[in-house]
Image (cartoon, rainbow over all chains, first blue to last red; front, side):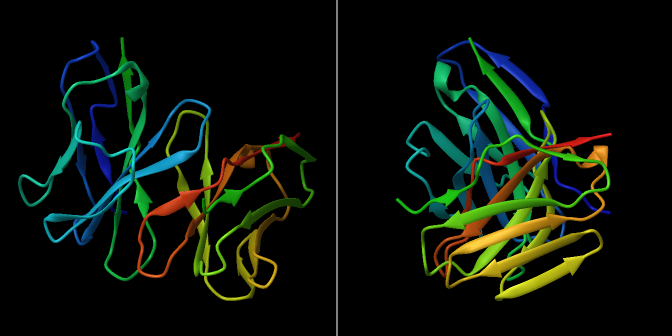
Amino acid sequence: EPEVTQTPSHQVTQMGQEVILRCVPISNHLYFYWYRQILGQKVEFLVSFYNNEISEKSEIFDDQFSVERPDGSNFTLKIRSTKLEDSAMYFCASERILQETQYFGPGTRLLVL
Amino acid sequence: QKEVEQNSGPLSVPEGAIASLNCTYSDRGSQSFFWYRQYSGKSPELIMSIYSNGDKEDGRFTAQLNKASQYVSLLIRDSQPSDSATYLCAALLDTGRRALTFGSGTRLQVQP
């Protein structure tokens, strides 16, 4: 069964450094999402992406964040200058068009020191 | 602020019993609802979706939706210790929006 994959599974970085989180969505899916979950808190929406552009973003997704689909398979989330409060699990999700069912990847645990 | 609310639990049930998990939402315009299961340190795993009033059954799971009361529930029959996890209720709050809004989750413990 096709799955969303994410790399790396864990990332430790210093405050102020840039990180890039990578996702490979399910191959016939066209909508892509990033969510995050701070330890012990709710899963929060960050951004959705369709047809090579951002279709929605939350107030969390400020200028420090960007997303890109650099090729036909990868979908990346970049955090330009990490802060301590960016420490969280970051989940990528993908969805076949009009199905309204989002499938989540295993997540990247980001720790900012 | 449009919200999805869940009791955080833990909800403790004996093995073989029915577990009942509840969720309310604030936005009357919400159309689509989802139950995800999340094991500790893992990602949300879709269990069921429900879009229409009434019940929807899939194996041991039954989702129930009551749009008039803005209420969604998940029943797990014949609960197993492997069902012990956090159950997340999620909704698409506005027609046309694709961002899921999640509740804080209810932790279920099934006692052997």
